[in-house]
Length: 260
Image 1 (spheres, rainbow, N blue to C red):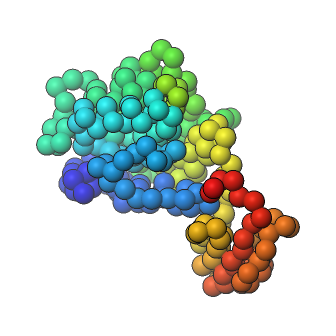
Image 2 (image 1 turned 90 degrees about the vertical axis):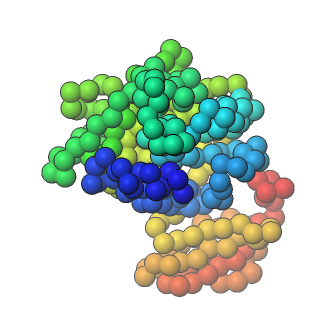
């Protein structure tokens, strides 16, 4: 809550909204059909193969050390713009901007930019361009850090927007750009999952797929008929793969190694 309060109090731009930024990552994970827990920093991270800390502006060295240990032990950490810019008292560090996370994320230096409502910049990720104008952390990566996306225009054209590095048994990804539609962020997180060997789905907004105690459940909150991909060998217990609006389908798969 301190992070939320502080960033809403000092938004820096009227295009920044903290909760929509967080919801963006929650929604993209749900579109992957990925299980999601919302936890506090006091929880044990070790049971989670992936950990996203969206815009975690207020932190201390102890939290950074815990993140570092999590990654070294095989976790995949995703940090987003504004993370680590201030201490727990909402004061800037007497050091380069976001200095406590530099070593962890593979950052040499960073600064940020905003654009007016009427102007959109572009980010190049994997040969595709994505529009942004909310927030841009402009990154200079440290040696050994991979650049996944770069700014395609503005005076910092060619500078890093998204960086990624391996650390111990795990990885750290820093997403420095906040977009309106979340398409850039979705594809970056998808790549993190895929490089970790975890497949993702692409459910439309309003379709939810969950796994509970050996059973799969899909619900259709949209106004359109949706087709749910269910393996031929699965046993459908309720409903069908053709989901009417407000429909539900429950099925059990013969073998599901992911949840054993």
